[in-house]
Image (cartoon, rainbow, N blue to C red; front, side, top):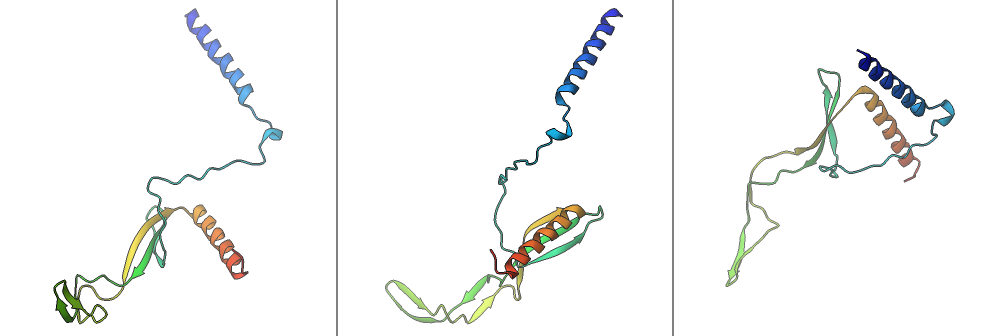
Amino acid sequence: MAARKKVTKKVTKRTKKQAKKTAISLTDVPTEIECHYLKGQNYRSVHADGFYGGVTSRGLIHMAVYSERRPIPKKAFYPVLGSDKQGLFLDKEDETKRIGLEGIIREIEVGIFFDLPSAIELRKWLDNKIDTIQKGGE
C-alpha cells in the first residue's frame, strides 16, 4: 500500500512541475506564427469554368469545380483529296461526319466539402481578390 502512495506523489509532483514549465503568461503569447504551405501528393492545378453543388445532410457545403469543352468525337470522317506512295491526303479542315456526343461537356475536376466558417473565409478571400482586380491591381 505504501508503494502506491509514493507513486501517486511522484506523479503529482511531476505533473505540477510540468504545468509550471508549460504555463504561458499573456505577455509570452507570440505576435506572429510561421505557416508552411506544402503541396499534397494529389495536388494539381485545374481550370474552373463553373461550380455546382449544394448543402449536404450534415450541413457541409459541397462545391464541384468543372471545366467546359466540346465533346471529343468517337469517330470523324474527312474527304480524301488524293494519294501517293506515302498515303492519302485528307482535308482535315472539312469534317463531313462526326459520331459522338453533342452539346457541351462539363468535366468535374474536383469536389470540395467545407463548413460554414470556411465558406465565410472563402467568400472574404474571393471578395478581396475581386476588389484587387477591379482596382487594376495584381
